[in-house]
Image 1: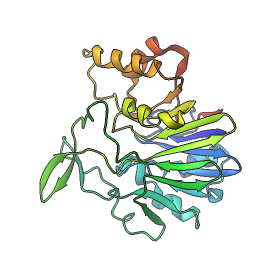
Image 2: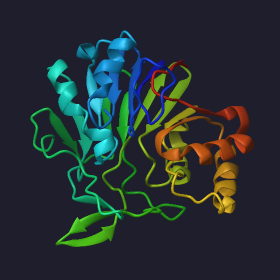
Image 3: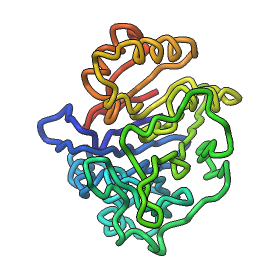
Image 4: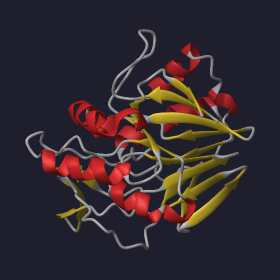
Length: 265
C-alpha cells in the first residue's frame, strides 16, 4: 500500500508547495483513490513533481464539507474526466468558523455531475476500499466543535459533523483507516472502528485548537490512543505543537506526514 501526501500545511520537499489543507493519493490492490484535494488545486503541480498522473485516479473521496479539503476538486476534474467523487450527505452545508469566515465547499462543486452523494453508513468501492460514516453511532466522548458552526435559518449552531466520512483500505494484513480531520473525535472513531480494527490510522486529529496549557486533554488522548494496537500517521489539524507533545508520549507509534512524503505500508 502506498500513500502520497499531495497537500498538507507543511512540506517535506522544497519543490512541493504546502497549503492549509489535506490531500492523499492512496494506492492499493491495483486501485488509485484520491482522498481530499486541498483548497486551491496545488495538488496538480505537486503530483507532477512526484511523478504522479492524477488522470489515472479511479475514484475520489471527500472527507467532509470544508473548503480546505474540497476546493481543489474542480482543478482535479479538469485533468481527470472519469473519477467519481463520493461525498457524504450534508457536505454542501452552510459552514462557518467563529472568526466569521464561510468554510464550506465551493458552490462550483455543489451539484456537479461528478459528485455522488452517499447516505449509506457503509459503501464498498471495491478492491479493498470502503467508505464508512459511523453517523448513526453514539460518541463515547463529547464531540468538540472548537468554534465551527453550521448556519440554519440564519442562526449559527455548533456543528456535529454528520457530513464527515472515512475511508478504510485493506491490502493483505494492512488495514488503513483514513480521516480528514476527525471532527467527530479520533477517540470516538477508534471505538467505532473496533469491529474492523485498523493497523494504521492516517489523517488530522483536530487537536490544533487545544491550548497547550490544557495538557490534561492531550494526556488523556495520548493514553487512549496508546490503548489501541494502531500506528498513527497524522498531520494538518492536529497542530505542530500538539503533535510534538503527543510524540513524546506515544513515541514511534506516531509520525507526521507532510506534503511530498510518500509512505509504503
